[in-house]
Image 1 (cartoon, rainbow over the protein chains, first blue to last red):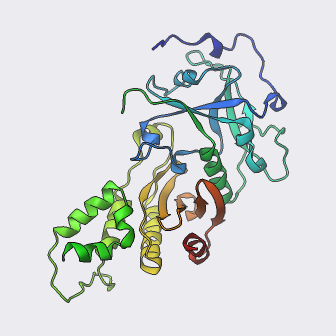
Image 2: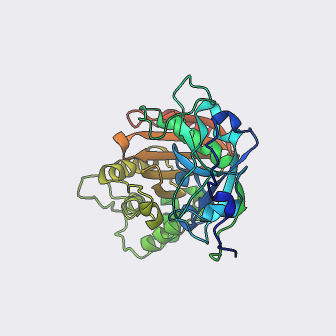
Image 3: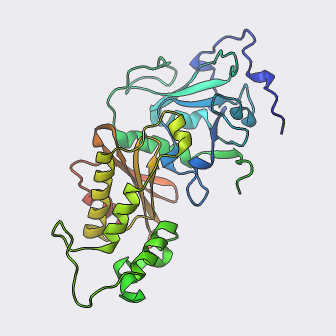
Length: 160
Length: 164
C-alpha cells in the first residue's frame, strides 16, 4: 500500500468552494474501522454519526485518501454516498471545509451540516452553529436513509 | 429446566436469532437449577425472569469502542442504560419482543434492534444521553415505513405496525 501523503489533499492555494458547486451525483467518502461494524461485519445505523459528519469530496480525492487524516489508520475502510443522499428531505447539506493543517491538510474535506427547517440545500450552515433542539426521529431517519444508500469503496485491511 | 422450557421462555423466534450474546444467555440458563413448579421472586417483588436478567446484564455491560472514545464520543450514561433496560423489559414483558442486537450508539446512547421474522420488518430504537430522548424507526427491506419520537415510553403504535 502506498502510504505517501497524497498531493491531491494539499491545499496548494486553492479556495474554498461554495455549496452550489456540489453536484447531486458527486461522491462523498467516509472512513470506517472495525469498531464501526456489527458482529456480522456490517455497518448499522448506530455507527452513523449526524450532524457534522466529516467526509472527503470525491471530486478532489480518492477513497483511500480518507486514511490520511488525524486519528486515521492505514487499515481503515471507506464507504461513499452521493450529495443527493446527503440532502435527504433537506435535513442537511454538504459544506466545503478545507483543512489547512501542517501534517494533515485536506482540500477535499467537507462537513454534512444540519439545516434548520425552511433553509435551502444551497445555504451554508456556519461551522459549529448552535444546534436547535430537533426531533431525534428525524435525525435517525436521516441516518438510516444514508446507511441504505452507502456503497463500500474499500474494505478494512487485514481483519477478516 | 429443560431445553424446551428454555426455548419457550425465550420466544418462538429463538431459532432464528443468531446472536452470540443470546446464545450465551441460553447456555447460562441451562446451567441454572430450578425448583419445579415454583417461580422465583426477585428482590423488587417482580417474578424473576432469566430473559430480563440477561437483557439487563447485556445492556449494563456495553462499552464504548476505544476509537469512538478517541473521537470524543461520550459513552451511554447510567440513566440512559437504565432507561434502555426498562424499554427492553417492557417490550419483552408486554409484547414478547426480544432484541437481536443491543449496542452502543455513536450518537451517545443505546441502540436496540428487533426483527419480526414473520414479515421481515425491522424495528430499531435509540435511547440518548441527551435529555433521555427515545427515537424509533421501522423498516422493511431497507424501506423506511415510519420514524417516530417516543413519548412517555409508549411503544404501542410502533409495535402494532411492527407486528402487522
